[in-house]
Image 1 (spheres, one colour):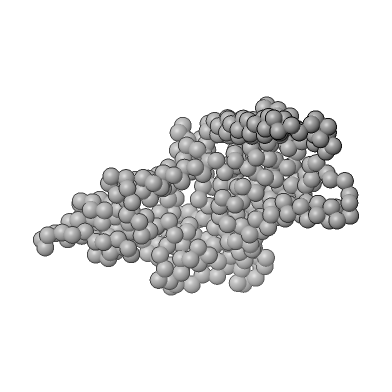
Image 2 (cartoon, one colour; image 1 turned 120 degrees about the vertical axis):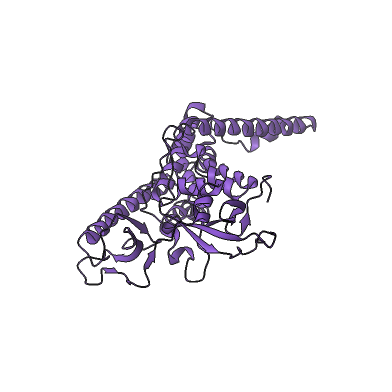
Length: 388
């Protein structure tokens, strides 16, 4: 999922009860819930390196306890800094001659103690939530890496799900609004406000997952009894759309081509429950040219084919990539562009309409059908020295 959902999930985890056990629990949960995405800094080494390491070791079960420990260490450092500043302020007030009686006129509530065991458990749960959230979309995670490099994906929720975002946001905003209303009426301030709302949001998110999983199974049932392709189907994938749990995209593979279909599970018995244009929605598999075979052996090719469960590799000829200069070659040498893209990210929701660049697509310039001249993702070239 995108970062905002992770942050909000962490905040709800902290406020669901962990903040009653230890100070800094919500802070630890928020940090741990998003910490795994620190692998985006591999982008400094180039877009291909970022693809290689994204959702890699930081998104595994063996990394979760380490992430939790690092987060607790960061919280310890924050606490030390805050405590040091408070002690300096107190000493400054005492040296200025302010009496102890003045301190006692406005007694402060005793600070909540830090329970480091509870804090670590909070960070552990929040770090696990990151893996769970990322599994629900179709990009996937490798939770057992490096022992098992297989990608796992639930493909039940779109990578940006406004319904879940709204639910989590509501759980954090409503207690604040009720708190303002209580202040207006002079009601006593509640120390741990919003626990019920946080639990409601987390349970609601799980309920949405269950609902979407059920609709995904419905879509599979509909596809099983619907003749879409004219040839036997080798495999099928169902991809979610945002907001609407009844709308799914099917990707079908036959020996010679791929075909997509739109599925409406709200009316499963309707004649138009499955729609697919045998001309518009069919894409024949590209030929394996010498340039394609050479591109598959490059760094991008190895990384992309490891990740891309529905990867398509095609030779598009001497077509330069937008924003990237074509190779400067002697007149007696020829170059071609080999493109990589994944069918899972080729629907219109991700801006992959006609004439538009497909998201998460890569490319390689191949010279004379055998030599690599350049490679990259989108409009960003991967420099051999690791710079952009």
